[in-house]
Amino acid sequence: MDESELKSAALFAGLGKKERRALAARTDRIRVSEGEQLAREGDFAYEFFVIEDGTAKVTHGEDHVADLGPGDFFGEIGILEHKRRGATVTATSSMKVIVMTEQALRSLSREEPAVAQRLEQVCEERLAAGRG
Image (cartoon, rainbow, N blue to C red; front, side, top):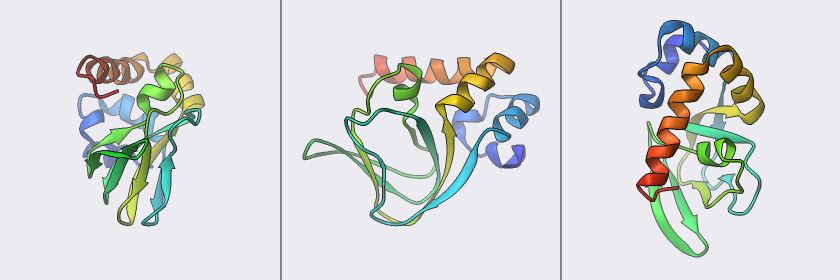
């Protein structure tokens, strides 16, 4: 990915060009078809996602708990906290998402700790708000 493409994601808005460049080298953009599961409740978390385009639903058990769209992200708590997925996320339209693996995040946190700190801050805020 090109670092300039990450500017539009609110999650990465506070990062400088150098940090975005390092992040871009470790992320991929993928296309997802409607109906595809991006995360399955109970599975181990190996990556997190930032939605660029499209929509998804979040379910916990049989309960529909949230709808996600452009700018939303998910999966960061699982990889930062080394937890299993707490919900299932299913595409409700075709989507474009930015994906980063746990391994890439660990590598990035060694080289550009500001990026990992930003994600950890967001994770803590979400957990405190009860959205984890």
